Length: 291
Image (cartoon, rainbow, N blue to C red; front, side, top):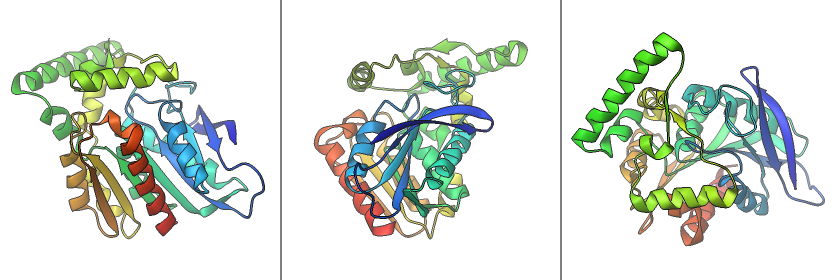
């Protein structure tokens, strides 16, 4: 079952999809909020995660953040704290449904959505269980750590120039996503293929993404999730969100916590084939144990 819905985050109209089991319901089920990644919309990866979770008996909500996909708002902004509030609203909508047990709400986020999920759980006690897949712990370290010294200098210069333009004009320059998101040639190809298959055109990214990313650090709050459980899934060959980011989050988090590292797998490969099977199996088992 898939149902299209509309709701509001910080006064802005958002669109989403509810996924749930078909047929007779045997009482309220646990619900999972799905938080998409950096440039993700609800049609990218969310249906695949939802299918696995629904098969395991969960009800899910996927949605477009403000300004992305079919949601209202200034287009294509990162707005990391705004994404947390959008996810907060999604959790509210999910918990109000008759088929969902509001006392058993979890969150699953992937890539930058994992950072959103962690921040949401740390600040919203309604979230009872968390899974974050190939995510980041510290925005500045992540953005600069995957680049050479010259690339870091160029990134900082570009951010400083755009910062001045934004303050004077209210507008940020835009560039193709791989200009800001550091990817290997192999991972750029996988990233483009995922969006081609979904018929979602990759949107240009405002350069303000750089400042917004470098000021958002889930490491600041990850310890606030405990004693609620946190699952982290990393991939050994991740050239987009290196596994060190998940390891750092794991070290700072409280128990119960679990870190799974999938060998011989890159960032975008986690969304298909055996790595995706492993990721979903770990997530379902984690939610089954704690929700």
